[in-house]
Every structure is written in C-alpha cells, then in structure tokens.
Image 1 (tube, rainbow, N blue to C red):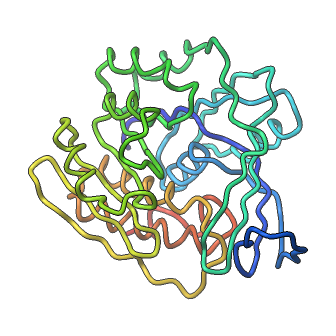
Image 2 (spheres, rainbow, N blue to C red):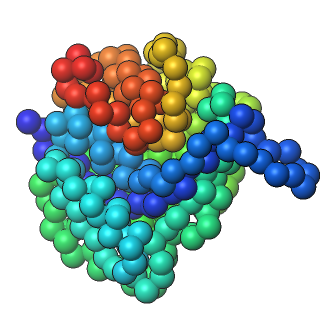
Amino acid sequence: MTKPILILGGASLDTIIHLPALPTPEPQTIWPRESYRALGSTGAGKSLNLAALGQTVVFHTLLGGDPEGQQIQVALGHPGIRLLTEQTDAPTEQHVNLMSADGKRISLFIQPPPEPEQVDWNQAQQALAECAVAVVNILGYTRSALPWLKAAGTPIWTDLHDYDGHNSYHEPFIDAARAIFLSSDNLPDYRTTMEGLIARGKEFVVCTHGSEGATLLNKEGRWLEQPVMPVSGVVDTNGAGDAFFSGFLHRYLQGAELADCLRAGAICGALCVTSRELASPELSPERLA
C-alpha cells in the first residue's frame, strides 16, 4: 500500500445538458436529449478515481453552507477519501456543462469557485507529513498553499487543463510542480510548450489530446505516445482527463515505467467516458490490470 495522496481544490455540483450539437450563436429554442445534476470539478474527479483504484486520498476543498455543499459531501463519501472541507460565506461552486454528441463541452461557471482572503491549511499541513505526493489543482485559493508545500519538499503534481502556453495565472503552479499535465486544446504547437516546461526543470510533462490520445516528454528528452483505448460508446466525457491523470499517478506510485503509466491513464479515461460518473463504477485495480 502506497502512502496517501494529498489533493487540494476542486469540487462542484454541475448541471449536465446533452445536446445533439453545441449551440450556434443565434437566438433559438433547444430540446436537450437529457439533463441531470452530478458531482463535478477536477479535485473530486481525481479523488474518486484514485480511491476506486485503492489509493488513500486526503482531499481539501471549499464548500458553501448550502444544499449543494451538502450534496457534494455525500457524493464524496468513499471510504478511501478523507475529506477536509472549509465552509465559505460564498455559495458552493456550480457549473452548467453543455455536452455535444461527439463529446465536446462548453462549461458555464454559474457560481465561480470561492476564493476567501484566508484559508485554514492546518489539517492539510498535518496530513502532508504522511503523503507521497501533493496534487495542487489550479484554483485561486490553492496558490496560498504552494509556499508551505514547496518548503516541505513533497513532490507536487499539477494539471494545467487548457493552458495556452502564456497565461500568467498558471505560473505559480508551473514553478512549484515537479510533474505537469495539460491538454492541447489551446496549444497548436504543444510540443514546443512541453519542451519549454521540461527546460524549467520538470521531471515529465503529459499532454492529452482528447480522442487523439496523449503525449509525454521526460527530462531525458524521450517522447512517448499513447492512443486512446476504444470503447463501445461514449456516455459522458466529463472527468475523463482527471481519470487519465489518476490512472497514471496510481501506476507511477507503484513504480511502473512511464509507458505503463500512460496506458493505465488511457484505460481509466476510457472507462470514465462510458459512465455518467466522474469515476466509472467498473473501475478497480483488477480492471486496470
């Protein structure tokens, strides 16, 4: 059994709306195929996938004192997740995700993530002493944790999501991280961006390409490519990137080679898109193997 994983930031309650195609910019009436509310955001997705793989997770997040915050706490009630919550005066983060039949998404942040002036990190700091790695998601409030995380010397991993290669918002997370994940959505020349991140001292960088797989570059200059795993049908692509991240991290902590970590990530991502959930009910260490 590996040491626990500390995850900072990212839980929301989302309304998922499935459409035949994403709407065009004109007045119209749209009849969705279906809609439902579900747990969302990057920290929740990573926590549930890692817990399903048998990892112990310590997950810190901010929640409002509202019904949405209560629903999130219930949804994260997995025995492998130790939930550290801090209640904020602001409402709980909420999104509306418009999903097309081909898996594309438009996310509307109808209630942005809370960003209080002060965060009580005491419990997270105490938990860090026993954790193997800290995953810092790019929410505004988690930036205040970076100084004490760096001082502790625990490896930091981060997920830059749709980083464009230039946005200064991401700089504190890039500077602190040992391993970086990102997508190529806003990076037509993603290889140059990956090389630039490696030049800044990162152990490796992983860039995901949706249905086109993923690419890894390590500090020795080695490139690896991973195709997606085929599935019989796509139900919901929400959380697929977090599932990929989780499968990769799970195998990395087991001492696997990077190519095997990529394959594990691809399997977890494939399972995720066949389910409405952030972590597929079919995901398990045995299924991954």
